[in-house]
Length: 488
Ligand SMILES: [Zn+2]
Image (cartoon, rainbow, N blue to C red):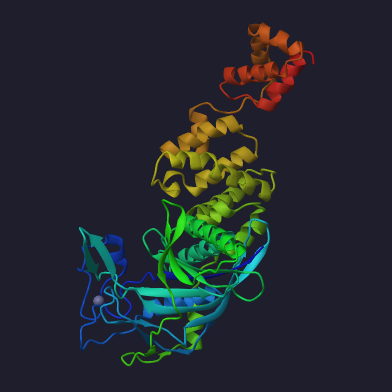
């Protein structure tokens, strides 16, 4: 067995109004994806004599990101030039941060499938600018500078990760945090978040030869490429062969990593401080201000949902914050209804019913209508009342389905729907007894089968009572009375 050591380098574009060092739009451009080379200016195309200006909004967003990832925020940092030639880099260098990153020494705790929590240390998060894009078409290579100069954050972890699962969980939790903070679109398919993996296998504690996997554009390819690389490297090492230090890509069709270029040693980028940009000085007051504006983070919300509402698995509400927010509003409305109607169900039971209907029946309705906004379909107040009616046993689960669907389609409140459609549950025993007697009369074959010991027949008879009462009989009561009628 070999020990697997993985480190991640993750780039994510900051969501800002303009690019990192010029006033070209960023957000709108990202949304529109305009024609090539229409969103450029002399600064982001690196014309001689131009001067970059630091985008404060991007700096605020990286500070917020660093705080969320438990990093130290450097009060003094600077921008450096990373020199290399590539056609998508018009200046011949990229403005980045070398020895003084803005955020360092952080960590992120991830929950593993085993139930354990693992802490992954974060070496740094620094600010840089994105490059242009090369497009290959008809045997030609064209360059589009629209993306050049878009603010980009780079996060580097310590080599604390030891499996594909851990790497995937880290990236997923990071993406969730970026979305909560609204600092990045973090959409992997759109290239707003890009992952690179450094992976090595070894027998001892000494690190093995490192292989880099680049350009992973989904959590799935990240996971699959790591699994494949662990298998490939352990086969090589088992045979006594050497792993070559190289950069690889992922061939999704073949399901394998493929060599891109051999890497001799670290690049010689000849970093030096950018003479056009002043040192970046951050005051503790600014950090405090940003801290005070931070929203609740996913992990805190996860813990709160478990404690406050006793939800065993609140993950759906954490991954879908809009649904999570709706849930909280609806539950609080339910509590009000429960108080007004002196419903004696406890608050945890009410929250459980609310979560249950939101994650099952309502999801089903929403799935049939892509793009539908839940709050526009059913107000949290109406949903809260609906939950309260169920908690208070005023409607059966069968009627609840009908009511919910009508609430969804018409936006009406549940008590009006129940009244208009005569869906009030039959509580009157005499009335249920009458139906039970009719059902027994009409289904002699099933009655005989039941008396011979066929349990299925009983379920069938209860179903008949429910159908005859148009779902309005209380199923439990119907069952009890049926048993009495059948003399068992
Ligand atoms: Zn520009």
